[in-house]
Length: 426
Image (cartoon, rainbow, N blue to C red; front, side):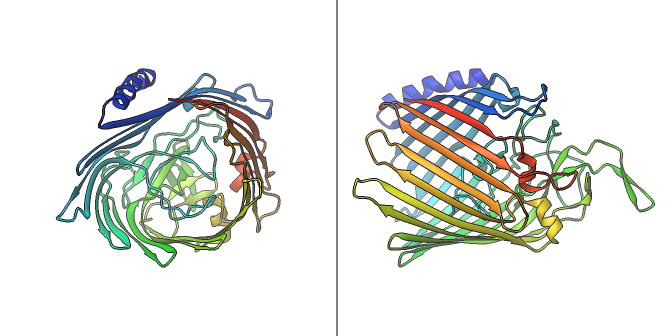
């Protein structure tokens, strides 16, 4: 079904690109990744996948349609084979000055200001079999009303569906070693249904003051950032919880989130701030391998600095420094909830700015509170021609387990891998 869906999309995009009111483009790529050996023949140490992305847009007068979808078929790990609708919406402008916009459909949101840490960018569900600092997103079914202002905008959102995240399968080196059950969204104290429909809403105000871009938002939704993995089926024997089902179900709680982003360029520097505070409807405890848990109120703050340096050759170097912290729950609980609870990100991007678009990127993430937790990333990319591009790199995790149950980046220790991606654009 997934393959036939992709085959159907390609002629649609090609036809759209020929019509005068349509624009279309796409890409098809070959992905290969090789993990370090873990001496477990059940796991998939190699990944060989075909990746496709198609995009089309139509615009006439006040009407606009956008469609973008991602498809992946992996020969070695069938759980990676997915079709993801990223954008698929219709919109129209209204009002005497056309300063109102009405939108309905699937949409990707980008509410982040930083490179690696994204506390405010929590609407879209993620694909967890991707880079942990920049996870792939799924489009969220959205009804939007936006009012354009002189130096900004204000928008209200309604989300009628809880879009479930994508978790790696039991053979994936980036997973939990087991197949997780279907996601359950806890609404109040109800964990008896895995229906995906319900009331979610939010709003966002964006404004530019001088050179500073500011945004403020609120969300009342099923939070996708901190799943509790376990089971609600357990019995209390005295003071000891005893599970009556395997603790392999991801649970998500309803939350109220308020947050902001700020970006301020000053000459060759860009200062960044991103923050979000969440309160949960958390009446129900879940049995986990660590005991009884539920989502807990928390606040995340990320600060960033970007510095660009131009060279006489025409090339440019970009330096990144970011830090993120979380507070609210006890420290031990914070470490369970988030990969990046007290972390620093250092990055360097060197852009040759030549005809082939050659680029080198290096980054390091480390926990300044917990010992020996590192993630290193090195990549190189360039065009091979007008329609071909290659990217290769290495992701290295160094975070040995300190207890029997891994926490934070310890989940990925021993799962370093090299990869290469060859892409053709059309």
